[in-house]
Length: 82
Image (cartoon, rainbow, N blue to C red; front, side):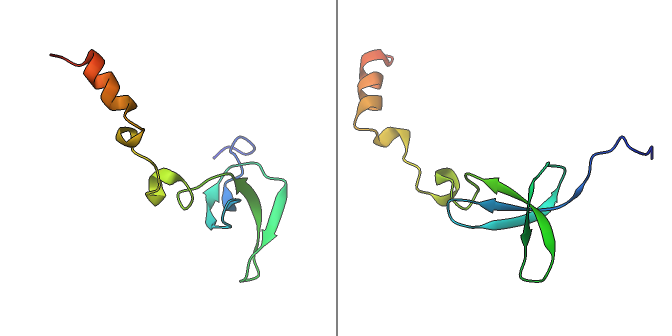
């Protein structure tokens, strides 16, 4: 491998800001902050707005398009095949 051309691939802690869920994985993301974990390790910290633990699609709280007050049904009635 050539020296100096590869990104810094290391363990990083991703934290979901909406619920505090932590994911530790390997990444090349640039970070400025670090976090000290319960096991004593200090890892780079990357803050996320949403993750699979808080996204409505993955948590099952996303509303279906069919439940939007009849708008879809009105569209189907108006432009559907007859």
